Image 1: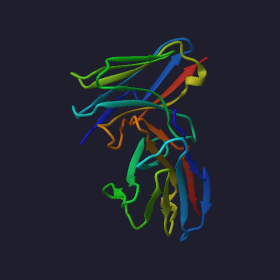
Image 2 (image 1 turned 90 degrees about the horizontal axis):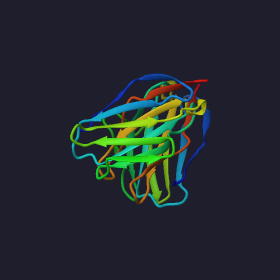
Image 3 (image 1 turned 120 degrees about the horizontal axis):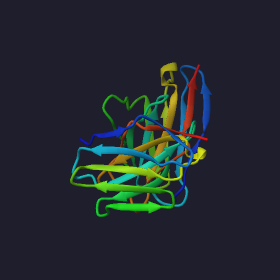
Length: 111
Length: 114
């Protein structure tokens, strides 16, 4: 089955700097790669996703890149703000199969 | 994005009692919903896949008689924790995928068994 590795587990950045979180997946059949932001005591919130027919997608300060050959995808947050502090999860799936999650990255943005 | 509503957000129950958690897709129909459990500072662990009109598919190690799942309609799935024990205390989260296969999560339910 699918296995998703996520790095780093913790990340601290200064406000205004960029943050990058990387994930690798094992199943070449996976074609859907979402990213979630989870704040304490809340459910994960979908922030951006990418499908296997696209190499990059951007939404304001957030971007995701996908390298199908290397089977890795990354989340990029630019101009970080304190409210970006949260736990971020990457995931992978094929079609409507259950998402397989990475272990999460705790991002701290220091003002 | 689509909205998934989960209720209750927090529940405290006594050992031996049962607790029902509801998950609703508010603006789309979901033939499949997913139930996850999350331990503190850990990732989401898939418990089961809830299929509308049929039996749920449980992950290995998840007791189907303890975690009863019912998906009676295209917008509602319920998880009932039966004969709850303190070790069942956890954060339970449901998810539903819309027509474009995007997965949205409920707010989560913090279950405390005393």
